[in-house]
Length: 295
Image (cartoon, rainbow, N blue to C red; front, side, top):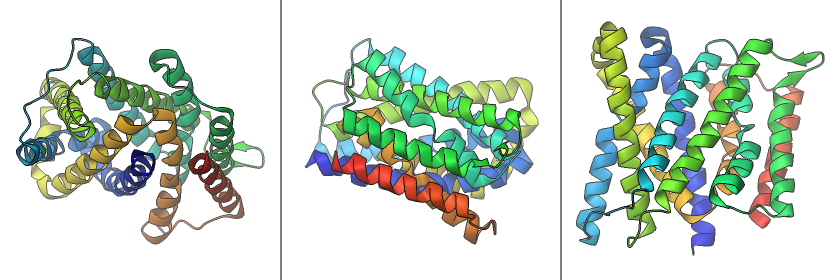
């Protein structure tokens, strides 16, 4: 059963994350990069808590008591995700929505390497072939004759964001699998709550210290922020459920379908046309994802 569940969870997570990214992009103009980053944590945290409470009430289980090794993993995941999200929004401010997502989605190769080093997650030859083909697809979408679109700075920012997302995925999977004696749903939800709690506290303190006016603006825009936070928490719930069931490299490779969702958002919302090169990249992504699922 779990062999197929992680696929369903990942597809749902990618879809809702695309919607959240589009909402955050709109908020960046008013709140700035850090403010828009904080929205997903500040307004996502209450939804994550409600989800965990609902799960505990439904299962009538006690709260987990993770080992000490849980905390370094979850802190790594939380801090890496803050940095990754901020870098992502910076890149989005300088270039195409779809191409920014494409740069970030060079992440799976890094996840496979980090997962092998830190968690011992093995990647088979068919899986690596699938990862390389799908990653080639996002690289094709991000290039044009003469080099990468938009210059070296947004390219480096996007790639750095992908690297931090990779470290975040490894941190969260490491935390989830150290939670003993509970179902994978409880372990995933418990980790999500603590991850969002750390992120909310850190960014709230930072904004109170450096930009209290931004914090006021966030609450002034509570309606769009609440929706973005809900979408973020909803997407994160499914990411964590998938991490609980399989290696992070599998999840983040299948997550490349987010590029397809982003293309749809860009076409219908931002009126960005689909080029022949982007279409070629989409085909490669689909082939890579299909090979991964088959593997």
